Structures are given as C-alpha cells and as structure tokens.
Length: 275
Ligand SMILES: Nc1ncnc2c1ncn2[C@@H]1O[C@H](COP(=O)(O)OP(=O)(O)O)[C@@H](O)[C@H]1O
Ligand SMILES: [Mg+2]
Image 1 (cartoon, helix red, strand yellow):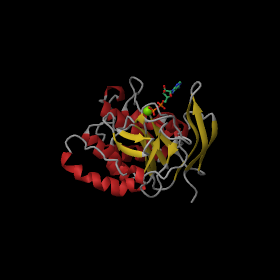
Image 2 (tube, rainbow, N blue to C red; image 1 turned 90 degrees about the vertical axis):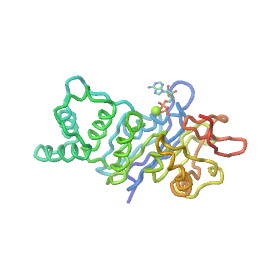
Image 3 (cartoon, helix red, strand yellow; image 1 turned 60 degrees about the vertical axis):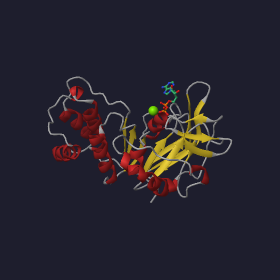
Image 4 (tube, helix red, strand yellow; image 1 turned 45 degrees about the vertical axis):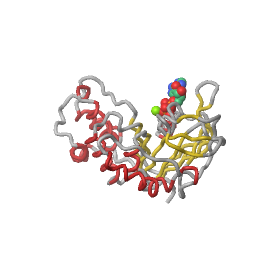
C-alpha cells in the first residue's frame, strides 16, 4: 500500500529565515503521529501544508488516490447563528456525500462526538464543545487522515480521554501537534520532532529504535494523574522506543523546547527541561 499522504522535499519560509527545508513526511495506514517541537518551529505551518490549507514554497504533497485529508485548526470558531446540525451538514455537502446518506452520517457522527443537542448554536458552545464540534466536522467526511493542531488545549480531562479513545479506535490515520505528553503517550504510534536544534534539515522521524540520545526523555504527569508517573518508563519503553532515528534535521544552536524536552547539541542528549 502506498502511503496515504506523502510529502517530499517540502520547504516553507516567512521572510528571510526558513521555517523548515526539504522535509519528507509520510503518513501510512494506522499511523498516529505525534508532531512535537518548540513554539514557533513551524508545526502549525507544516500541518497546514500537509492538509492542503497552505502552499509550500517548494516540494510536493501527494495524497493516495481517492484518499481524503481533514484538518482541525488550533482555534475552532464558527460563524454566529450556525447550529451544530448546520456545521455538520455543510461538511457533508463539501465532502460530496449523497443527500440520502447525509442524515445517517450526521447522526452517527453526532453520537460519536457525544452531542445531545443538534440545534445548539455552535458559537455559544464552550471551548471544549467547540473543539469536539470541529473534530466532528472533520470526521463526518470519513477522512483517511485527520490532522489535529493542539487538540487538547481546549479540552478538559474528560474531553481528552474521549479524544484518546476516538483516535485509538479510529479507522483513519492521524497527525496531532501536541505538548501533552500523556495524550501522546496514550495515542501516538510515532513521534516526529520539528526543531531548529537539528543541524541537517528540520525534522526527525522516529520509525524504529530509541536512540541513546533520547534516553533522558521523561514525560511529566498530567495533573491528577500523578500515580501514573510510573507510566513514564512505559512511555519510554514503548512509544518512544520508536523515537527518532533521524532523517533530516537542522538547526542553529541549543534551544529550550517549549514542550519541555531539551536537546543539548553539545552532548546530543535529550533531557527534561525546566519548562
Ligand atoms: N502567515 C504567516 N505569515 C508570516 N509569518 C507566519 C505566518 N504563519 C506563521 N508565521 C510565523 O512562522 C513561525 C512558525 O509558526 P507556526 O507554524 O505557528 O509554529 P508552531 O506551530 O510550531 O508554534 C512563527 O514565527 C510565526 O510567526
Ligand atoms: Mg502551532
């Protein structure tokens, strides 16, 4: 099977300094890729390029034949007056779903998202429910790949757990930008780091094998989950065992990663930063 999404040699800059250069990024069946990196590294930009929302300066982003990508931005806002039902119906129309199939699809998706009230006005929902609605809007089209930009930011713990389950049971692949290590621990099959701390290219992919350099990386507990700190070892052993073998990365000096993961270019070590 070819990858669902295949980005090759993708570069993007705003102004003089490139955000990333010549990045290769593929998403295959069953992949749930956590995209991490310091603030300003270009994670949102890369996601928008992968989602076809933004043009790269160079390089190619190809989708497998008939495959669909859906993209959930970091901020979820809806036009005033639109009801939950309107948002989902418009998404079904945009996705070209036949009229006779729309109602069933809409109800199935509303059920998965947990929306009791299809006539609620979207813009009046809480941040957490707006995020759920934005995710519903994306998955109602039955995407092959779902791109999520910091999806847990507006979700409470119940919402995050709901999203974890949704993604773990999904029949679509996903790429999620997140700083929430617990979320990544629970969902990601692979971690990709985008950071200028690397010297050749900007991106590190983690297909197989935990490099020595990642051995100091420890996840922090989610508040209220302190007892699960023991899971840290599991995180390292399982999810991060597939951390970074290093494709192309480049960067210009040691940088404190906003995610709290610190890469020291002198020693090549990763360690938990103070942030
Ligand atoms: N449309 C844009 N025009 C100009 N600069 C932008 C634009 N979008 C993002 N940037 C800049 O690119 C950098 C990376 O942004 P972003 O992709 O949002 O990073 P991240 O999501 O990793 O924090 C930031 O410095 C941001 O100001
Ligand atoms: Mg961002």
